[in-house]
Every structure is written in structure tokens, then in C-alpha cells.
Amino acid sequence: MSAHPGHTGGKRLFSSPVFCSPLNDKLMKTSTQLTLRSGDSIPAVGLGMWKVSPGQSADLILAAAGAGYRHFDCACDYGNEQEVGSGFKRLFTSEGYSREEFWITSKLWNTFHRPEHVEIACRKSLDDLQLDFLDLYLIHFPIAQRFVPIEQRYPPGWIFDPAAPAPKMEFDRVPIIDTWRAMERLQQQGLTRNIGVCNFGTSLLRDLLASATIPPAVLQVESHPYLTQEKLLKFCQQEQIVYTAFSPFGSLSYHELGMASPGDNLLEVPPIPAIAAAHRKTPAQVLLRWGIQRGTSVIPKTSNQTRLRENLDVFSFELTDQEMQSISALNQSHRYNDPGHFCQTAFNTFCPIYE
Ligand code: NAP
Image 1 (cartoon, rainbow, N blue to C red):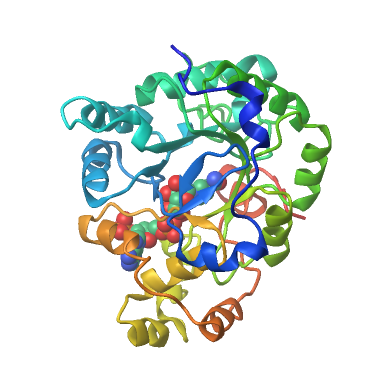
Image 2: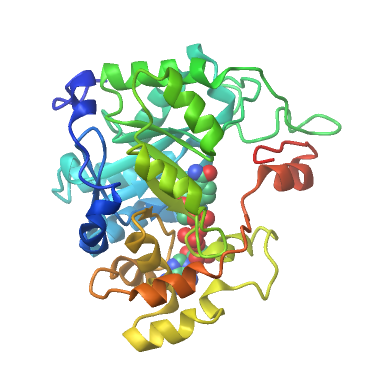
């Protein structure tokens, strides 16, 4: 597995950031890219790959590239990296795209937090994705679980032993900084150009920043008008950490998992439909535009070819300050993706991380 030829180790980290500053507000409103502290640019809209079925994944990657996507959000835990990798292979061989045109993210699963397992997990994702390097490798959750060897079960998922009489999660005690040091080594080796974290709050970020040699480049968290996380966003902007919003449509992703109430659809909540009508855009486009205009990147998932194009077409209009404020005023600090809740319900295990 060769390192990325353009990788220059720690030097890239200290070039000055372009975004993540309130001073660049106007620029943030119009740019299709966000610049990381490394100097790399991440496309503001990416395609989320969670819950894309393996059978659909390769074709979806090709359709998305054809529609203009240059950013893909993948993870070991999504159970489709091999099929996504087949899509990438077709992109870079028969379709003639170059690897350098794309931003590809993957994530370290909870069972690989021990330092000796981090590189094994990253190389497995690279092999499955048929890549020589990632653009971004993220710690998926601040939750260390007991190691499950790749040859035993992959992806390992949340439950330690699905065949046990009462299956549940089993934890390990691994300090985040130990995992992070191993993540830093991946970047230094050129296996990934940037490293970051998901599902961290300000306390964990502060602690990580205090000890990290390479600060996290990106924080990926749930973010939509019902969960605006304004203090977290401001903290990231202050610390030059790009903030990526997952589940930008709020409840939509969680209906099929039984984790959202049927009537709880942000696309239909006032004032979203009226703002959409005023701009001749769809409610989904308004939600994505709101995310981009507040300086975050967004990674909507869709398996539908029409919606692929719709979700990328968010740079031809601008929300007014009043519209931005009225959407932000929907905030209820409501989290759909909360391990403190779903681990109890789905995995018979108490696993809070936010309180
Ligand atoms: P999402 O993108 O907010 O919502 C996806 C849902 O919205 C799907 O049901 C999709 O259905 C529907 N949809 C997509 N575009 C639409 C449109 N224009 N109009 C109406 N409905 C639309 O939710 P998500 O998948 O939870 O989050 C996005 C990505 O973030 C994930 O795929 C994953 O890559 C990442 N993520 C990361 C974490 C983490 O812990 N780091 C957690 C969750 C998610 P169709 O497919 O039928 O269009």
C-alpha cells in the first residue's frame, strides 16, 4: 500500500486556514469547498453512504460522480465498503476519473480503538475501498469496545457476541489519546491525509487538543435545525476544525430504524416549506443550504438518482439572514443518533456519551 505522493507529513498542518472564521462569512456563503488547517479542501456537500445497501453501492458511486459529487462519506460500520470500493475502481479505471479529484472519508470502528488495532482497521478499509490513501479518517464514536478480530466478524458491529444468550455490547478501557496517537501515525505514514473525530463534544475536543501533536481536522456530528449545536460550531470555528453535519435532514434517516416519530418530518415543519417555495427550491435543499451557509459541510445520503442531483444543487441561491435565523430558531437540542438511547433499546446496553 503506497503512501499518497503529495503527502508532506506534519508540514501541511500549519498552513493558514481560509474558512472557519466569522470574518470569512461572505466567502462561506458562496463557496463549494471548506479549507482544512492542512490546506486541503473538502467539498461542502458529500454523499453519505450509511444504509446504502451493498447491492446498490457501486452503481450509486458512479451515478453520484456523474452528477458531480466529489466527496464520499464511508465507514467500516456501514457494511458496504467492499462494494463502494468496486465503484471507486470503476471510477478510476473504466470511467477515467482521477483519484485526486475526490475526497474520501472512512471511519475507525469502536472495536479498533486499541493502538495496535488502528492501523489494521485503516488498512482493511483501504483494501475494501481499493484505495492507497484516504483523505480523512475519523474516530467514529468516543466509545471503545472489546476487540473483535477481522477474521472472526467484519464489520464487527455493536454487539460483542451475537450468539450469546443475552447479546450486548462489551466495553474496553482505552484512553482517547492512545487511539489518537495511532491515528496520528496513520497520517504520518500517508495512509490518510487528515484525521478527525465524530460525536465529540467540546470537553473531549478540548482534552484532545491539549495533548494532540496533530489537532483534529474535522468534527463530524449530527446537525440540523432541531439540533443546531451553536456553541460546538463556534468552538470548532475558533479552533479551525471543520464541522461536518451528519443527518442534515434530521428525523428522515431514523424513521426506518424506528428511532423517530412518524409525524416528525423537518421537511414539512414551518417555515421550511414556505422558504423553499420563496426560492423555488425544495425543503431538502433549504435544509442543506442552511447547513452550508452557517459554515458547515453536509453529507446527505440518498440512494435515489433524482435526489442525488437535488441535494447537490444548493449553490444557486442564498438564504437571507432572517431566513437563517428563523430556521435556527427551530432548535430543540433534539438528537436522533444518541447511543445513550439506542444502545439500550437495540443492544441491551447502557452507553451514554453526551450526559
Ligand atoms: P440524512 O442524509 O439526513 O437523511 C437520509 C434520508 O433522507 C434517507 O431516508 C433518504 O432517502 C432521504 N432523502 C435524501 N435526500 C432527500 C431529499 N432531497 N428529499 C427527501 N428525502 C431525502 O441522514 P443520514 O444518512 O443519517 O446522514 C447522512 C450521512 O451522515 C450518513 O449516510 C453517513 O455517511 C453520515 N453519518 C455519520 C454518523 C456518525 O456517527 N459519524 C452518523 C450518522 C450518519 P432516499 O435514500 O430514499 O433518498
